[in-house]
Amino acid sequence: MYCIGLDIGSSSIKGGILNCENGEISDVRRAPFPEPAVGGPGYFEVCPETVLAATTDVLGQLLECNPDVREVRICSQMGGILLADGSGQAVSPYFSWRDQRSLAPVSGGSDDSFLASLERRLSPEQFVELGRELKPGSALTLLAWLQQHGQLPQAQPLTIGDFVISRLCRAPAQMHRTHALGLLNLKTGDWHQQVLESCGLGDLNWPALAETQAVVGEWKSDHGALPIFPAIGDQQAALRGIDLMPQELSLNISTGSQVSRITADFEPGQCQTRCWFGGQFLNTVTHIPAGRSLTVLFQLLTELAGDVNEANAWQQIDAAVGRSKASGLRCDLSFFAAATGDQGEISGISAENLNVGNLFLAAFTFMADSYRKFSRQLDPAEGWSGLAVSGGLVQRFAVLRSLLQERFGCDLREIAEQEETLGGLLRLAQERAAGC
Image: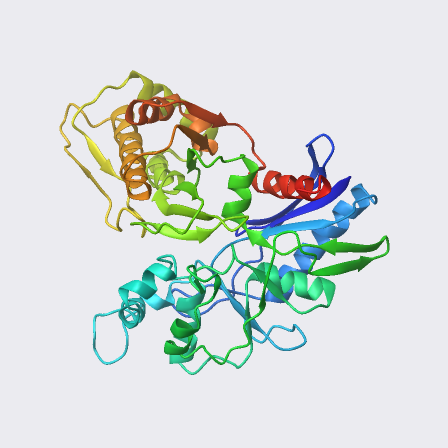
């Protein structure tokens, strides 16, 4: 059986043909995710109709590649929100998870941000029940900001994936639990009405919560009607794509990075907690500095060189790191708001140790130390038996793999899969085909 898999990501909308019999992913197609509109400081608003149009275009291309597909599976970016009316039409922009408006100071001369004032409305118990999910671009934060500023229509909050599916199928929107970040009471598995009401959001038309293998509508095309399943979170799709096991600790290291572990029950800790599949949970720490911060160093080093062959430059950096030893140089990669803070620095500099190899070795050491630190927050008992390590940076830099091996002292299962989210959608399709 063939299926279409779609990943509505923050940089591109990607799709491919999923072969449930041999597990192959083929005919991958991409379209750029639409650019944001010009708005206020920190705003990141995207027209939902442009996302729908780009997604429909990718779907059409894939259907031409293989008219024999039997269903459509979708994952999409997590966080962010938009509002739709009863007919599924958007009545707001898509407020992306990259939106930072809530970090601006509240009115009245206070230095406090809106996000900080919102967090004070929650009791410690409520914060835990929400999975410790309160970020600048989270749905709860954005909706509360709109309500506070008199810009919240009485409508239905949706993720961008939910909106696209609802419009494709002309059916009432439903939301999968992996998408409802910071909105659910994880103890009960339903909307956290107490928190929503305290934030002025209780009267919104919250969508029904959908099960993973439940058909939420049909997309009708010239080739017939294709069932569509609820959009799942792209993090969960990627981890499902690498076959993350409960006994493993996941390190996903790419543009950003995260540490994650599956738990059978709701076991909150000093970390975020999200829904997993089959009633399980995912303890995770996200926004750990990785490739995006390394690029800051790379751009600094190549700024005066003019046109640089990027691939060759990174190879030279890798070779220089391989020749370096511990030198006393330290590099905190917290150049952006992250789990490690928002004030990066380079320290311990001397005339003898400031070179490219030592600088990037210090950066990789900071990354490995961060993963070790946050892994203990996920599971202080360190009950994992192995590491599932994925992401482009792990494949590129042998030194980083060695540092991880030294700090964790257990087997590394390296995943070279480049289409992890589509792989996760494929595995869900295979499970349904097998009657699991």
